[in-house]
Structure formats: structure tokens, C-alpha cells
Length: 64
Image (cartoon, rainbow, N blue to C red; front, side):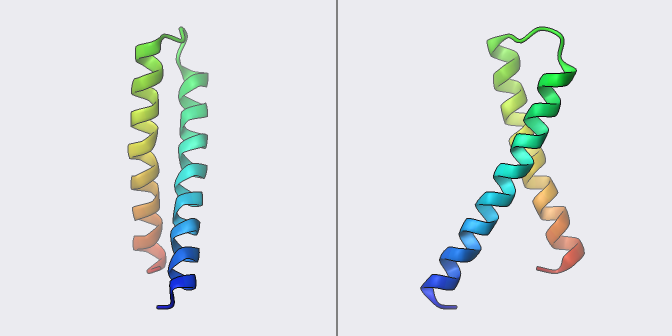
């Protein structure tokens, strides 16, 4: 793999993770009733774990 292709793959993975994280964090904010610092931290962490799981699941299904 050329360095340019590796960089493109890394950027695509980062963009996919960011998109999933944004969607899941927004959903978390919609669901909670009171926005507190602790709840924001927990929501961000859980959204990050969910984004990683969603990317892993997509890669498992598509094979890429």
C-alpha cells in the first residue's frame, strides 16, 4: 500500500468514526432529560464505544 493510499484509508476511517460518534452523541443528548457535565462525559464515551462497534460491525459485514 502506498503512503497516499494509507493516508486516504486512515482519513476515511476517521471520518466514519466521527460521523457515527456525532450521530450517537446527538441521540444521547435528545434522550437525556438534564444536561450535566457527568452525563455529557458518559454520553461522549458511550458514543465513542458505539462508533467503534458500528465500524467494526460494518467491516465484518462488508469485508472491507
